[in-house]
Image 1 (cartoon, rainbow, N blue to C red):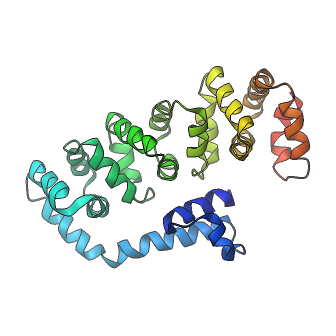
Image 2 (image 1 turned 180 degrees about the vertical axis):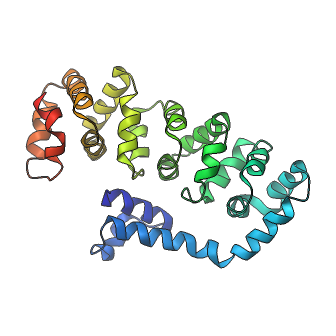
Length: 259
């Protein structure tokens, strides 16, 4: 688990810069995640009874009318909280009545961990519109959070909606499951991977994401990444090896360095 990733996610939840959370330095990544989850769950659990009753009432009326209540009365924040207590098949039907703007605003208020079953059931075409809206608004934190809980086949489809290589890396900066990011990156073609490596080389703060991703790849994929890296910059691997010489992550990248 990567601590900087979890700190970024907590900072986003609290509407603070990461520098403002220096007092949390004694907490490791798992403890930061636990704190974030406690904060997210506290509000939901406090009003769970109300959310359950409203969701139950929604089962008694036609979907079209229920959707109008969501968009015209409840709003995206309440709709997000009701989604956790709505049967998945009904939630999917309701989503088909919402436009991309309302779906995107609802996604901003959702807790990805709670929405996992819904993410698995929603058609990827609905998700495309939300992905484009979040990307246009540079909502990388929300996109990264959902990446951890999307089915991987859907995640790969949606990643291809992100045409900017630096933007892909900014999304992954908020995704804790770097192993999933590694599998998704491995399915991109050589040109797309080269563009991401070049973007990281141009913006050093993004190189951390490439390193974390490479460390999760098996040796054959690390060999492939080494070839692509050399295509981007023949000196890159040597510079990274020197930079990471004392870093515990270096042994996990040995296949990349030695290819």
